[in-house]
Image 1 (cartoon, rainbow, N blue to C red):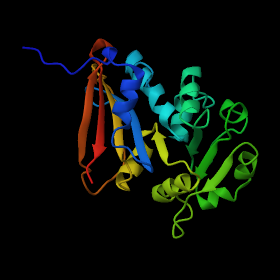
Image 2 (image 1 turned 45 degrees about the vertical axis):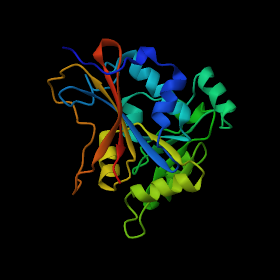
Image 3 (image 1 turned 180 degrees about the horizontal axis):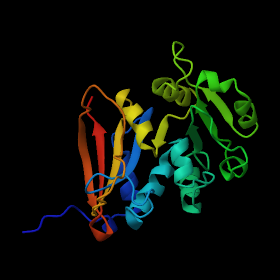
Image 4 (image 1 turned 180 degrees about the vertical axis):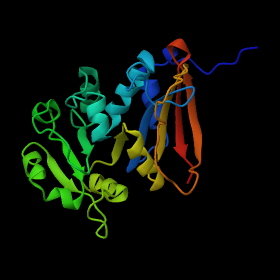
Length: 249
């Protein structure tokens, strides 16, 4: 006997939006990742080969619901991010729900190793935010970036050279960006896990074996297990599984 979860192809976008918003309340920090069966967060160095069209469908819908898309600078570079621009259908939905046309793009960079001339900063529909350390926020690179983005120091007062995850989250919430959608990468997710700030993990499981040295979805040190509960499991094209887990608090 074969027992499989419901097919995502049988669900409308409205159905999926209801599933992925159930139980979420602002402030809310959602993390979205893809992994292979053997635990790799990438194939040949990027996530592109993993997940397929249904993962992309959910990816777009999660951005649609977000106030801010949060990404570490290394992932922005590795995945070739451009400006944060949504599809027309997503913009129309946001307008109907009283939201700005596009979410804010927030980039985490302790070293400010970002190019102010990149398309991320020269072509966005909404001015991006760069979240950095208090020390870096006073640098000449910060001054250059401040012409194209809001540069926000997010350090604990006792550690001015580091980016504190809780301070970062609070800075976004204070700006009215309470529905936070994080897209990586592994080191940053490790920081969020250690700080116990992850409210939700939307995890796509690609039915493949990477078999190499790809990273896990999270990297770092956390003293405790963070228990999650399953909210749903859906089956996509090619037996991809799209799961949603909520933090047990």
